[in-house]
Amino acid sequence: MAETLPFDRTALENAWPILDDEERLEGLRLLPRVEAEDFFLSLSPREQAGLLAEPPRVFARNRLVIAVPRDNPGGVQTLRDLARPGLRLVTAAPEVPIGVYTQQLLDRAAQDPAYGPDFPARVGANIVSREPNVRQVVAKVALGEADAAIVYQTDLTPDLADKVRPVALPEALTLIATYPIALLRQAPNPTAGAAFIAFVLGPDGQTILQHWGFLPAGDTPTRALRGPLPRPDRGPGG
Image (cartoon, rainbow, N blue to C red; front, side):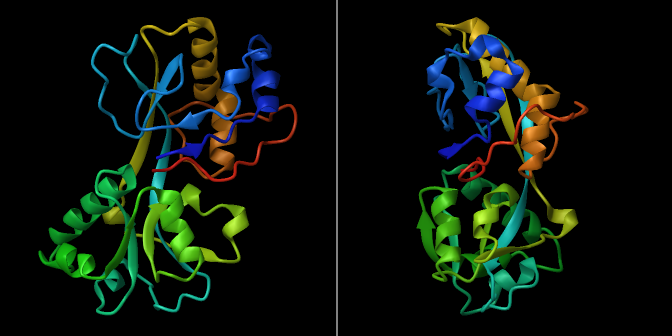
């Protein structure tokens, strides 16, 4: 997971003037391990022992969908189609968050008699590639090198609209990915870190996240922002 958060410098300055000189906040990236100096962001809900100054809070949620090429050559209409012999399926490595969610989804389907206990194995037989991150998974579909993939809905960004489209997963099997955030215990600038966390969890940050397809973190209201909404190259994923 190494995708850009949909917050640009203008949005941060509009909401938090105190951050004007925090150059290192530009291009902040979501990583599966601690990389930002002041706070921790991750798709994994596991708390990092001794590293966090506070319990992590969920700042966004994401829905899984099936991504198919725009012309859908594999004729994928439902989750069940992923087990059809001959379909080319691409996924992420099993240790990558989207790979973990994909396996959980297949395991959940296996408990449903409509899919059967061998459903994960039948889907697995169609996997032609395991990519290191969700961006490369989506790229394979966009290039027509795969008939389908399970991705986050935020990965289907406007720039891919003419190449890739979503197919909804069954509501009963849907998994929701969560994104926690927390201040680091040894943050060199805890004031800036806390300000950014407050921004992400507040109405302005939630407005931006929901604009780019994320599900709300909770009951935080949204509101109109000063200035244009940033346009990320790709939504956070992994």
